[in-house]
Picture 1: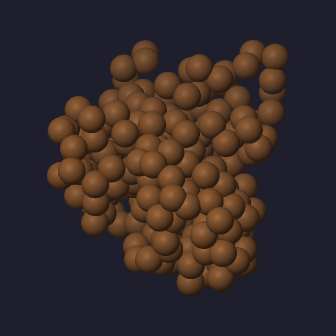
Picture 2: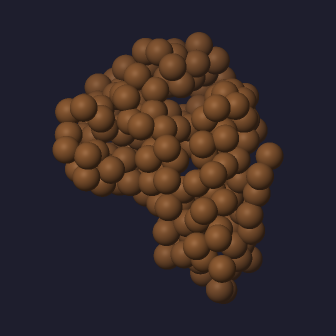
Amino acid sequence: MMKHQLGRFTIELAKGDITGLRVDAIVNAANTQLILGSGVAGAIRQRGGPSIQMECNKLAPINTGEAVITGGGSLLASFVLHAVGPIYHQYEPHKAEELLEDAVLNSLNFIRLNELKSIALPAISAGVYGFPAKKCAEIMMSACFKYIEKYSDPDSDTPVKIILCLYDQNMYDIFQKAFEWEIEKRK
């Protein structure tokens, strides 16, 4: 596990199943219809139970780049943030990158909106949506650091943890390189 402290924020990498984390909220790599199908969404449906899909049905559809919040059902997390990343081949690369950053930042905004103290994100769009893993890692890490820099409140000492939870070692290694690069860039 790799971690870095920035003021009251801790950002860390973890490897494993995001649905097993004990955090305030996990992020679902969602589709615009908010149907909990396969991948992260399927694991959320399976572990969280039917109440999450019922809440999603009331909120759908949403646009690519947006995020909405539901309860966590039977998950350890109290909330699920459903963020729609881009299907890579449907956009020009610069537009896909912009939409992925929007999905991450819109998810992180729930830290402020719902006073979350911990949030975990998967590699949004890097699975069946075909986003190149290296570029996904770079954009997601950059977006996390941008969020932290923008919302670091010197008057607040409430700690906040942002976890990027990667399912396998290969994706973890790719995100670790992007993480190290972001830290180095800020020295």
